[in-house]
Length: 339
Image: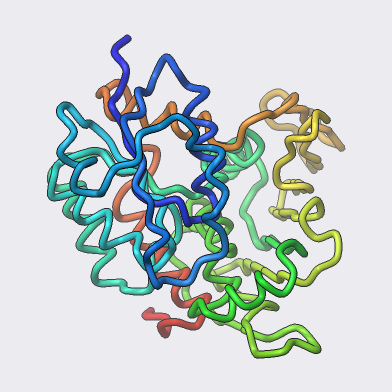
């Protein structure tokens, strides 16, 4: 199998270093030809000074990287404000793109990027980190198959308490705060399940005793014809990271997942309760075991590689990505929801 020639533009996105570490383990699929340092950018960022993940890789300018002979793909891992403009420059070179989330706050520019990539048949993958999560993929399959019955309630949270005051300052510099930065992951999942909401109502607050007014205590309500979905995101919840969770209720059953992911060597499990039997499961309470998970990004990157080779079609469309972006901007209070 021929390796894909790939580079990375940016090291200041929160996922940049760990995603590069994942890619470096996929030696049968990728040949990493260089990395572009974006620490000169004035866009708000939280990390970018830990260079261990890039040890031994060539440091290039963006122009040098895009002119590498045979370059096939680029991971765009800049700070949020630079993601879409950088990806547009990659698009003009015709290379496959993996762009991290959410993608700035310019809806028209995002639409231009996403729609033009699809029109030009340029493989494009958004970096929402739960798309290849095995438990969430099972839930998506169950809802689409109607196993839970009509869904009427979804509760999801992306709370945490890492980063201290430095993280609060970073979130305070982002329009839409922590809902924009982290709530987007769960909005991507909910929209894949439920489609376009009837309305999106944001509640953006600051936790008590902050030195400034960061939007670090947020809730969004997505209203559907016969369902409500709530997404909460706060960066001041003590012990919040391992308690991130999802609960979905339908007329035939419910699922509960907490934590949303785990890489601590313990089994990754989902709770399922059914009123009536579904394929493979009787009525009653079940625990689904997805085994030991060790890498958040490997499956996503391998999926991207398969798309680049032409061996697989995208999991989700440009229409989906654009709708998610609209919902994220509304949930973060950046733009009013358009019915």
